[in-house]
Image (cartoon, rainbow, N blue to C red; front, side, top):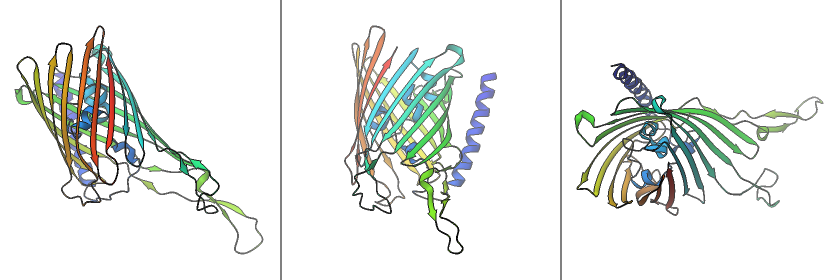
Length: 348
């Protein structure tokens, strides 16, 4: 009974925050958010299904999609590493570890890093970059996640994220929270799952640093040249609410399937619908998976929606004392090469 009361309180909080974010979403200020890297997906399994796995993303991969999924950790400890070729020669690296602490719950630690490569440094005095100087922006997001299965059907999760951005001589730091709920066997129907998550709730971010200082010369009098600082504007984080449902069943002893759907309400972008599915086949100690999915943005123009459909596969092998999983996904992209993402997971 106590757990049921906790769940009701959490669901009420989710509803209140959902209404808040939905109200904010009426102003579609596309391209004006801070920390857009928070929206870059990770994990080949979930990306291959178009990001539709809000209701059934589990383990360390779920830290990004729905932190409640960490409450369904299948092992005492799990580690994951993922790398993705994004757009415009940008690479995304992600690593996460999770561990179960019995009745206390599960704890996870995650790090996402964006590598932009070397960019020619241009200034007012050297607009063509003839000096041959370069800089490399550093974007790192670190997360600490707590998740717990309140009952056999309900799990909740919370992630606190530290956001760090460094661009040459300016930098910005912020923090944000994700909170999620997952419900399995909804309304007593085996295989039916529901997930709700609110992401990137936090204060606005603002750049600062010596790169914002300029020289000023007095227009009257004999005062010497002085420094003044440009005050950078602050911007909101790209907060969003996602609601997902999933249904799946086994076919005989060796086969299984899942079908997922999700709706995303963005505060600084257009709403998105996601659908995807997975087919699995068990062959002795090896599991094989085939996946596909797509995200749909009905109100977007051609320039506002560049990502298309996705597909991928996975192979899981159970050895003595460890489970090894390799996942791959490809997502179609307009104007750029497609995204290729690889993930490796180890369960102990």
